[in-house]
Amino acid sequence: MTSHPPTNLAILGSTGSIGRQAIDVVREHPERWRIVGLAAGSDATTLAEQVAETGAEHSGLGADHAVHLATLPGIDLVLNGIVGAAGLRASAAALGAGKTLALANKESLVAGGRICLDAARRGGGTIIPVDSEHAAIAQCLEGRDFSSVERIVLTASGGPFRTRRFLDDVTPDEALAHPTWSMGPKISVDSATLMNKGLEVIEAHYLFGLDYDHIDVVVHPQSLVHGVVVFVDGSMLLQAAPTDMRIPIQAALAHPDRLPFSVERIGLEKVGSLGFEPVDDGRFPCVGLAYEAGRKGGSFPAVLNAANEEAVNAFLLGFISFPRIPTVIESVLEAHSGTDTDDLDVMLDIDAWARSQARRIMRRHTSTRRRSTGIVRDDNRGPILRLPGGAGRRRET
Ligand SMILES: NC(=O)c1ccc[n+]([C@@H]2O[C@H](COP(=O)([O-])OP(=O)(O)OC[C@H]3O[C@@H](n4cnc5c(N)ncnc54)[C@H](OP(=O)(O)O)[C@@H]3O)[C@@H](O)[C@H]2O)c1
Figure 1 (cartoon, rainbow, N blue to C red):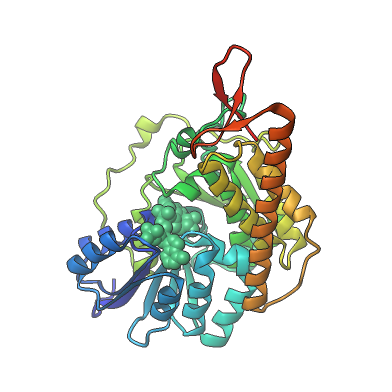
Figure 2 (figure 1 turned 180 degrees about the vertical axis):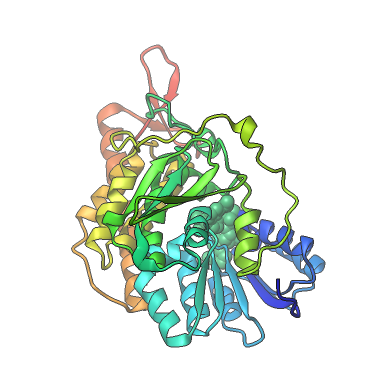
């Protein structure tokens, strides 16, 4: 390990799950990083506490402030832990300004993969993946000749509903209770629908330059193995680690060094057997939708992502049922004719179009169902279908 002065670090999305864990990592190794900048969305109280603790000289709220931090001359390393396409501008800005970007915000690459790669080429920035699956693949690939790679495999826990038969009455609380990871609300729902894996397939396409036929997904309920590289001779390298996001966050921030971390070690004798199974595309159509959007390319992945963000939000607010999430996304994709652009503003306009289209579809469906079934809204927790016995049951709209 090389010894060097602390690296100046900016954490975007510092108040979220990734951001807080990144601050934990810095707390463990204060000699390695100096937190110079912090950016969050709206949680001013937590941000102020973080500024008081870390002594960050630059801090603020909103995507514009994140972009400002991402390009500040004194900052070398930017961790993007913003949720959603709101993080795209900051990722492109950091890469365009020649920074090392530790990227948790997968939506940056889904909504603007070519835009980010282009910014990196022009500005000299580099991306180090934080997502555990991509961090795993990157570690398996380190120092190897890329022509020896046949395919990669991303593992998925399967989410909380892997073995649940009926998904119609899934509640937001159930969707938020992930079996193996503790994460922010949006990615937790994405993990429950398996859209998270779909987004990661597109992220992997841009990170590793592989076409979609060479990126596989397998369900691995223990979440112990995070990624697999299959080589041309049939051998495979698997990366395994405890389910603690501070491990890939630290690995990305310290890259290429590996620092000590005091997490409980995996006792393989206690693990027993490891399970791997295919994705059930019938119950979890989001993975297939993501492959389709990825293969079509252009603006389709950005539309998939924006429609998903809107549908997940509506589900969390109780406006649509869990199974409606993929159908809303599919309808928005069907309404999109596709644009081939590397222009950030054009892509953000398409993102905005997809969001309004998703909201329109969800509103239209809600009012139709309300007329035909007599659904009435309760407070702000979502619609209730009045059943003959008088009991209210939360239902899809
Ligand atoms: N959590 C994980 O374990 C995990 C694992 C792998 C990948 N990821 C990826 O990491 C990203 C963050 O996930 P998360 O779970 O940490 O989400 P989260 O807990 O919801 O946190 C999101 C962060 O983004 C900030 N934010 C939201 N909108 C913003 C905006 N317009 N401008 C600036 N900041 C904004 C939030 O600020 P406020 O708190 O002020 O709203 C918060 O700090 C996602 O892309 C996710 O897919 C997460």
